[in-house]
Amino acid sequence: MSRHRKAGPARTRKRPRTGVFLLVAAILVAGTAGAGAAAYVARAHAGGGDPAALVVAGIPASRSVALLEQDRQHMILMDAASRTLNVVGSPKLATRPAVVPSPGASPDPSTATPGTPATVSAPPPDPGTAQAIGYKMLSSFGWKPSTYYGCLNNIFSRESGWRYNAENASGAYGIPQALPGSKMASAGPDWQTNPATQIKWGLGYIQARYGDPCSAWAFWEAHGWY
Image (cartoon, rainbow, N blue to C red; front, side, top):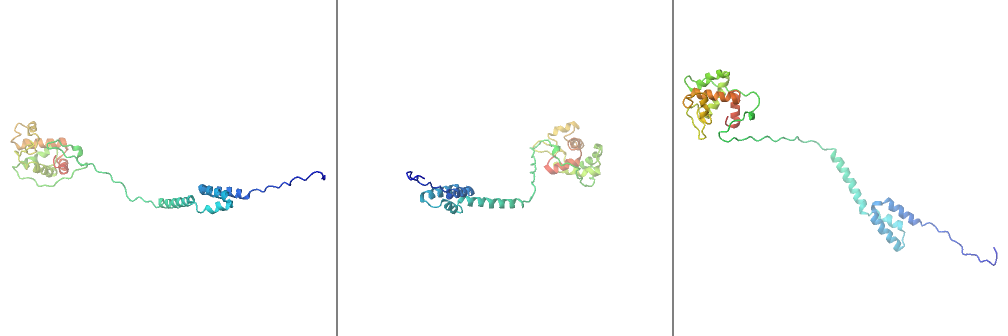
């Protein structure tokens, strides 16, 4: 080197700022603590301290980390609970309410209890009574008297007591309580005074509506009318 040239200032090689890289790495590891890390970075630049150390020191106190741990524990409990669920019962269907008919309304056989109706045992009635007329007339409709008389007796006994002149305020009349009573004129002109005419009409009504006296009686038991 020539003596007349002055030596220039020596160049110093800059060292990488290790603290900055550590700071970035710490922030990436504790991503959920972003707000806390930012605050520590600001303090580091302002106070001149080691920023990486400040961030690492602040991560355990982060509220976000605590919330994540709470969520993890909650999910564990929910998963355990879902494995212990058992069916404790089966749903019950509500029953359809019974329809209360207005006085004198025509019966609806479709609401009668399905299946074979139970018969009612009853001894043969005394001769010369309206009951005896009904007992004998059952066979003309295809019904065995010893089988169906008990059901017929239950109906007519409750409706009129087997009295041919039984009258109701609604207008029902006679042994079968026809409503109105004049309906029984189809069975005979003496419908007002002849028990046989009234019973004949009553048995025809039962056959057309219910099929037999015991089916009619089952309906009567469920509704209080037929």
